[in-house]
Length: 141
Image (cartoon, rainbow, N blue to C red; front, side, top):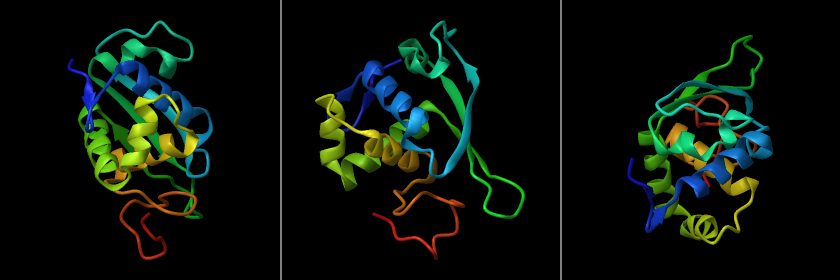
């Protein structure tokens, strides 16, 4: 699989760092859990999301939103195509964040923004997306 691209190629190692940062704390405010649904390339790393090889093939990662009082939580699937779309959006709206990724100077907030841009097609202010379609209570960054 070709490397991911924003305004410059982004390696699977850089994507792996972002995913690890997001899953280990960057998305905790709005995400109650993640799981690997499928992977073209077997993951041998532990935990699974820290295996760079995962991001070199096709994958599906499920993200579950925290419950909002309705007793159910929305689930969203991340694929390489959605991740590429999130990188494109992030490079258009927050190019400094992509620059941080390329320089290996990004933080958990950058990882959170990348996941939000990839899953929801926008970057949500505050603590997270709630439901991706109801934006009346949130202000996009």
